[in-house]
Amino acid sequence: MHPHPGAASSIDYADRLHAILESKNLTLHQVSQQSEVQYGHSSPYFLPHNLYYDLRTGRFSPSIYQMSFLSRVSNYLLSDWLRAFGFNVEDISRMQVILPSKRTVLLNSSLDDPQAWVPWLENKLRDKPIPPVAPLVELVEFTDRKRLGSISGPGSRDFLYAKIGHGDALAFPDLLPGSIVRADPTIANDLLLRGNGTTSDRMFLIEHSKGLCCCRLRIVGERLIVPVSTQLPYAQIEFQLPQEARVIGVADFEIRPLVRSAEPEVSKELAKRWKPRSLVQETGLGQLLRKSRTRMDLSLREASLMSHQIVVLLDDQRYFVSPSSLSDFEVLDTPPRHFHKAITLCSLYGLQFYSLLKTIGIEPEQLGKEPMPDHLVGRASVADSRRGDEELKRAGFIAVLMGECREVPFFLRNSTETLSGLTDVSLDDCFWVGGEPNPIHPYLTHALLVIVNRRKRKPVYLRSKSLWEQPLYVVLKRDGTYLCACCGIENGSLVVHPYSPQFYSPTQLRYPDDAEIVGQVVTIARKLV
Image (cartoon, rainbow, N blue to C red; front, side):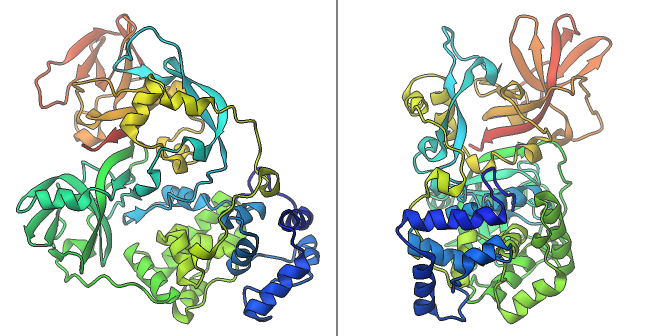
């Protein structure tokens, strides 16, 4: 994966390993002996006594087994050991967001580094109420960098995130292919019980033998559900809970990219009726890989071609996996020797990283629990003033936003280019839209934030396009207020077109005398309630 900013050369890795072991009063000789005593000289866990030499000559490529042993013997986090050797496990979720996906995939949202330093915000002093629509730069400003773990909301690890595939978008157009959906597992079953005999108002993320889907559910009997397609002709299949389907959570938040949106398709496999199979736990790596690849609707050749995209994105040929190697992993039930391949498999097949470890015999509960000091892992260190923690507790815009969001999906912080199409998103590109009580576009109902491409300032109204394809714009009126809507130029006037269950006549503003276009909305973050 990308060598992070603190990555070292091959020669530096030997010094870094020595420093890490020394911080725990360990020597390489001791660690090598322990690995041989516990697992044997021929075991993949074995660490050679001449490891320093191998590192300096560049001949050492760490296996996940060796790294897991180093984590156990030192009690340092496995993810920190990987970072110390130039890997960033957070790139798994980044690849899952970037790579096109036929099927809905559960993202690896729990791999972010709680010790990472991230920019944080504080409220700007205001003597006025928070406006309904406003640029973030008027409401907040960046302050000192904070440890990610110190600003993550309480209970944030309870949430799960999925990316909607373009071949199983049952909830289209309520959810678009490529949308990132958050699922809350804590209230899902309770909501289902309330809706017995009806179609649910809420959308649920569920798992069945052919994969995942996020849609509304119809309860047709005791523990018997039918996923309901909003618009597209997917086959209606009954599932028995919990044998044939598992409710993962209720969808409560969506991050919707409006650029590069894939057209939804109805997969042939999901269009015709099929008999549900029982959900079973795979007992070996081969079974897990075969099942995951099938669920993602990928052939061996297609998966290999996608691995080449990872090579390009991460600039390292070692992430490529040939079709024959993919086949061998499935048939021979043997884990990949190099850690690069394990990362590629997680990215391609939507595998959860720690579930993969467990499948190949590494128990996550037995790995180290202590974070490495910044200087050992190569993590840039800065002073922490703790002002950000105090700010979270104060009244103000940040408190309002955090109360609405419930958590910040920090694992997506390196995916903003994919989600917005912008190479460098700033506060000037982000707008608060959560104060508008009666939005005139359905996608803005319960919306909190939007990202705007300020280069696209010529409004276009596409009369032949459906609602989900209509571009949205942020408009600045001459009285200093903002609105967000579909609009276009007609006879020298800016016409704002309402799409609302309530009646609103189209608004006409003299253009550019009474209003100007700030930019086109490219991403929406909204609650699904």
